[in-house]
Image (tube, rainbow, N blue to C red; front, side, top):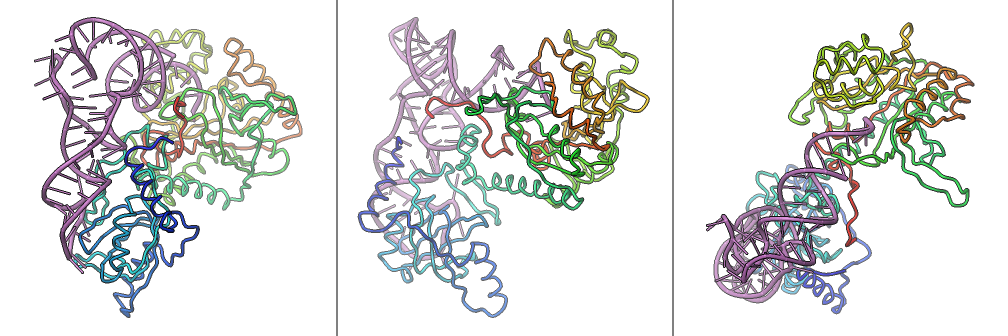
Length: 504
RNA sequence: GGCUCACUAGCUCAACUGGCAGAGCAAUUGACUCUUAAUCAAUGGGUUCAGGGUUCGAGUCCCUGGUGAGUCACCA
């Protein structure tokens, strides 16, 4: 490890402590309160009995001010901050000198004493004794904090995105709002579980390593099992396994876990991302639609304490019911094209050209429609909106609408111009399913990386009978982006994937 | 992968049309018994992302490469 000048100075302090027999990394701490508990205990005593509050507190030193025979510090733990007040009368000359010589910003310290208010009114621990809990050799990146009206204001905070993502520990250590994002993220996932658990759903775990990948259109990561001499794929969705469980009689199942897609990286794409899928027997996509808006507003209420979010400058209310727009009508409104009047790719291409819309050649009809949706319709869907009834050829696992074989019972949810979730009435006819798989194979013969491989075992499962089922999938990262108002997926994933560096 | 922009001290940022690489905080030394970006005095700190080129002279201009951000493509 190459040490900077600042680090060499701190290392020398550490070595001096060791030479004097003072452990810089003692094994155990003995704390009586968190910083918040200590402040609350003092305020309660102040309002009542006035009995002294003794406490032993621990935390990271975030500010340190020496002034002759007095010193002040703030320590921080996960519950907040408290000021430490060191007076030579209480700690003695020797310990006070040690504070000056051995302790730096970023060190972890344990301090015992009595809670009191300093002259400026700040609740503080008047320290009688203290010791090092863990020495920090590398200084924290943020320079200094200021407390203004109880709010911590940072000066010269760590802002460089690359450093923040590569050294997330440093980002978390100095940027409290980043810690808050991940508390919200945990609350979102807990609320999703609660919502589904309360409705009788069983949480399950299905394979991440799969011999045949499927359930979505994406390129997989490929890996290999040495002993089995078998090529395996990291899953791109949970769908095909979860629906096998419905065949097995588990009527309501869900899984929250990681999907892996070997695609480009962007502000809304990470190669691994967290997905929730649930399947509900005897439900159709309209019931799932209602459940979706209830679930999302429930989660917002639980994780944020309200149903209003602000994302990319738009403030929207998540309270049900959400807008419902048929995909055909939505596309007609923004492009003037009625997709039902163009049952094949060639006709749709012509209609697009007539209106001066750019057309990528050799795209199947479904892809063209998907393109129109993404380019022209999606950006307009600011208020929470369900688009429903999708073309069959981009939905190989969804059930056709009765009386309309070109359209399937499928919807997607959009908020603030971003796609959030995808759901449909599940195709449970094994004959139709096999035909769809074959169709997909043909349609993507040229770009066959994305086609759905034929999954014979899945067809066998369907052949044993799956009840009519509504299924649902949501990108949990996208949901967390929306709920925390963060425009980049990297802000809400602890360790987003970045390109490797030569020096690492 | 394409295009655009960025990369300077530990952190945040300056440095004009090419002309001695700077500030605040952090650090070091000292003063200071209620401070809170404490204050005051002094001091140290640079592979200007890397490599090459142009030039009397490059942080600045040119080329190649690296990483990031935005955007497009692909996808969710």
